[in-house]
Image (tube, rainbow, N blue to C red; front, top):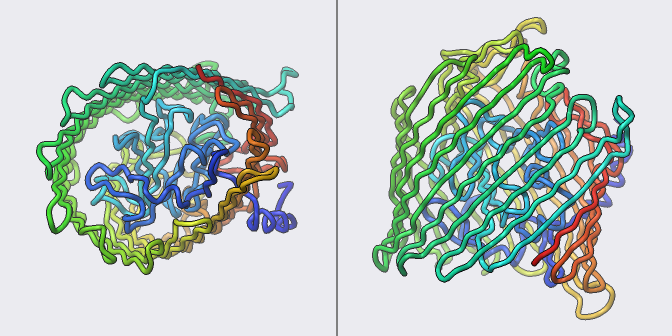
Length: 628
């Protein structure tokens, strides 16, 4: 490590002033909590409501906040959300595991416009999405067990990525190039580039868009070169006044050298290619004034091709996954509040040369009631009844309540339950490094939280405390180093923690500065394990969860067209060294074009987020966007 606690002074300085997630040059936004976000409609599948009315811990990352960050991928954006543990294995969104509040990557549910991206093979592939960062409108992060809201696998929370919808005819072209200015074994600079374009066509009551993106590079150390190609289509159709039909289809091919990704140090020559196709269509039907019905069907196919030694194709693992999902959501508005009811059915199948051929079916039925939100006190209560062909029937209730102390200050509390199904990798994987366990049961969680938040005005803040209990917790363990890892259900995993966030934003009527925004966030976790005697076992994931996490930043727009921002994040893991990463961006923007320069990892820190994979050092990127 080149940067440790002796540089904490810089971090403290950043916490008191640095960070910019708000990108608007016309009006300010603080990161993660602002006056402009309080009326954002949280896009839950069932009883959607404005953020201001929500009684749970929900973070909204707006498009303007994203534009101010020195990032090129969705993974990098999520790394700045307190409570999210984004464990990347390379640059450019190559591969990342996402945990929430100390949970593992298999316990997090990722959605795209409400469509579940759960992967029955492995949670390592949930971020293999067909959308690029430029396609994103905003991101919703819901912390806590959320079966009542999203169904199965939302054990620790959910991340819902909402895409930009077609609004006007036009086109956007973008490009970037970056380098660490270090050389590989062939004396060639480590570098990467990205190019993309989006076209939108509006005709009458129809809007369609197509986005194409390519990212490629020779990596940042031996065998980390990558090629990433994405295509994403969206269509919005209104055949009648009471119908809102939406369709999407996307494809992504993500190929990369996987040096040290999963089985270090023996996998120095490994390589992986993951292809994903996703398609969905839904129709929001206004049956009458008080009844809204939304049917939706989706299909997802993933091919994961992993080579332990790429030169001779040794240790080949080829997995084909097919997932079909159908759901029907209903919303009823009455004089006493909103009611939501519906059902979903999900079929998952895998054909793998390592895991074998397997399939399972999941059926869920839910009901929920939400009181009127225009009163000082509000609450909601509901439950999710789930049947899985492998694990039978289970019921997951939940409730929340909120009290408006003032018009913009809310006290809230919630309790939720959820489950996580073992993946096929957990159950059946066989290799010298990992041995599956076909006897695994489901993980179950109970989550309780209380918090206070203020989103209005120039100054915003929020704070919450939570307690989570997971029974039959699944962790990969072994008794000694020579043994392979094997997943096992331990009796119980308890986690306590709290989170604090604050932000400030203002504008200036005249002068050099047009607007200024700053924010800071802190997250603390205290996990413990009870039940089975695992004190002598070596854990693969538990000991790597975060203990302390701080994020901070500042953003300023000046001279009408310039924007500068800086961000910092500090992580301290259990049984691992702490590190701080600082990024910065400067951008010049006119109505039809923008150019920017990013500097990532300014302090050139050596750090690890996942396994034995060192992350890139200092990296500089130049890019631009042109609108037509």
